[in-house]
Length: 251
Ligand SMILES: Nc1ccn([C@@H]2O[C@H](COP(=O)(O)OP(=O)(O)OP(=O)(O)O)[C@@H](O)[C@H]2O)c(=O)n1
Ligand SMILES: C[C@](O)(CO)[C@H](O)COP(=O)(O)O
Image 1 (cartoon, helix red, strand yellow):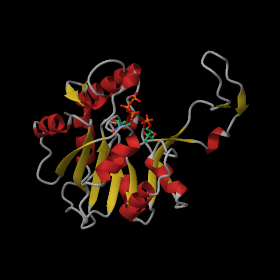
Image 2: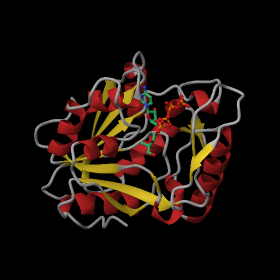
Image 3: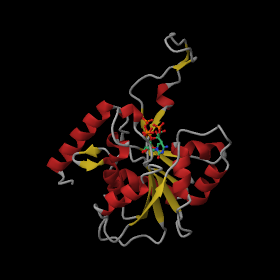
């Protein structure tokens, strides 16, 4: 738990929150980050989750491309307090592009950057702090992750409707399901995004750092840091939130 009596660190940490996705897999409705979770937009929970860390002095929200003024207005209705600044910028067509636009808004003074999906609104502050601590201890890139419960098969892609042949079964004990926030030394992350080859993007930011040949390390993730992707995830998120509100006084 972040210690409220501890002064903010001189190392400046910012969180970039890509929130520009549509949420197609969640079904029809408003952009996913703006949909309600326990009566409050998912994005507000995600922003609060980053600001809960005393290390985070700036949150950059990457809004849907045509929705930055609306998102700014929404977040102004849910103030963060004096310790955390907030910037809202418009996003792009892909998550990677949205993160790149968020990084462009960072002031020079920032040393450590978290990238956190708006779609992971319930990540606990201990997980956020563990990622930041590992970057500050010298790792250029840190990802929170959990072991898998399911066995994973690699398949050969086929036309729609044709059964896919299995071509391999990676050893499950060596696999991890990766969450956010992912934490980075600022220079490493900027370089990773600057050297992306057209058409060779990655599904997460650490994947871009791996392509630079830089080390990426894993710290323990958390079950409640799951990504709200499909309708059932929203049911689970509502249940987790209701339990927190009943037991922790979480708002
Ligand atoms: N052009 C995009 C696409 C995604 N994201 C963000 O990236 C995070 C993870 O993406 P995902 O869960 O896949 O969200 P969506 O792209 O909205 O989902 P879907 O693929 O179902 O449309 C989300 O916080 C989403 O808002 C973004 O900022 N810009
Ligand atoms: C970044 C991420 O949440 C790590 O698991 C994930 O890769 C995002 O993927 P999506 O394609 O945007 O759902």
